[in-house]
Image 1 (cartoon, helix red, strand yellow):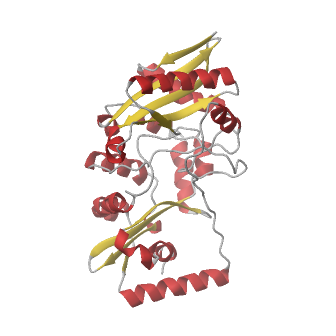
Image 2 (tube, one colour; image 1 turned 90 degrees about the vertical axis):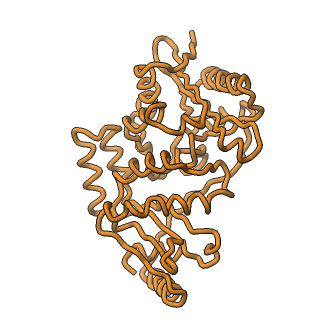
Image 3 (tube, helix red, strand yellow; image 1 turned 180 degrees about the vertical axis):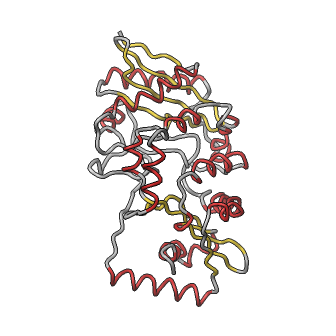
Length: 328
């Protein structure tokens, strides 16, 4: 008999988090997140997003075994911004059984309806820096730590429940030959010289600290027209700074200034996907070692985050700053 249970206790939160590890066990393309980070995200005492979001989480059980999970989120800041009454389904995972997926969505949708929501979209998290979107192509590529990976059958299950595509998000992989690199770097150098841009590079994460607030200020300005975005307050900034500073190599962070004002930034990180697979959700005893090793000698860089203040979008700073990462 199928049961859908609401998550309340720490034990139940851990069961919610653990389900994805059993579901994707042996899948060579799944990149396990750090369990402690996932648990912290679901803890109202640790995640300040609970101050402007209403949430519920559920797990599905059959024959005393967890077979699925789903979350429902109402981001009141987003609804205030858009003037809509939208709820989000979040962190959904399930085995290939339409009864299970149907019951999970039914419970989440009913709760959102009870809270006055008239539309549901997802998968989305608390904010746009949480994992979001549904993978429908590229199942034979190893994702970055900021990307999502899903079972191929999710698309069919979710569409059969009446959901339709709202937006396309596309991830690109760029490989440049020597000739293309030289051309791009010449262009970046010309832009830098002609328009008086100052490029700031870093030797330590401590040096980066003073730029955390300016970077998120740019995100708040530049991302407002993008879908699903809400502004980051000081508490949210601290949360994400703490999360990402653990995996930053300052060598791959670039700040660009114009007349002493920060106008753009780019954060690249060495690809940690294979290291995260070796860690399998745990930093200790060996997970941290695998991550640190991956950060020392990367062959692939993942573009984690970039922002340009709106009035400088036309200067193509995103393209220029990328090549400045490599020492221009």
